[in-house]
Length: 392
Image (cartoon, rainbow, N blue to C red):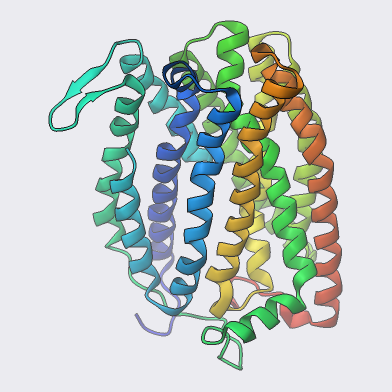
């Protein structure tokens, strides 16, 4: 590729492929939320233990592997790192778009297999229905690998003048430490936001099944349509609003979007699981899903504004490390622990979801607010710390 920027058509095709890859990864990840009841019954485990399977077991491995892979992406061919990662991920399985598709597709798959007894598959032998569901949604993701191979490695831009950040751990750590208020406020605020949003996403199927007698297939269809219909527009709305604010002269547009979304989300997240009917729960989950996704796109953009090319993958890996370690580690298991030990009632899952929102929501808003203030202080001293996509 030449030194010129790629043609818009090629750039958007890469965006579409990466979007699909991320969606497929979420299909594989989120289908477990529809299988909590079969897992609970078949393995005879508590809500807290199901939460550990949904959150901690995945989150620890996912986040720890992201750190070395982030450094590798900053030093090596980024396309190849993604390609290899997608291939390994697909073989090892058995965000709004992926979550919605997981609920819709997974709900159908679960409805087909979970009602039956053990299934006998060639080579694999006897599988429980929930194991067959994992295989059914995981294997097709291998088809994504050839599509990723069509992406060309782009030219790296936005490097610092020193040019040693990608080679020296000490220099990279010094750079991040000098901006610790921004990074910590950003990472911790979004991680705390994820605590109760991940908890809600993981526990909503159990709520509808236990309290209102829904089947996994019914939950998958209804919740999947809400996730697709409200989650995807939420991400786009957050980005469009930030673009409008930036054109109006607000260089902190991304931070404004994150804080506003977090503030607006809290009351809906608290009230939705306490609603007295399935229809009311689903009606309130619409704004919850929309407002949950509003900060996602602008959160990724905000962190790039103060990070040079040499460190972007590593800083993003640290962000995802904290986000998933805290969000997945405390979200699903937090709801389960409150249900098992605080309320001591399986039917209290809705109250547990609301309690977690009340505990984590204000802390998330406070962290994002502090990070926003640190960002403004940093950019007032160093105007060139703000990097737009065109100059970066």
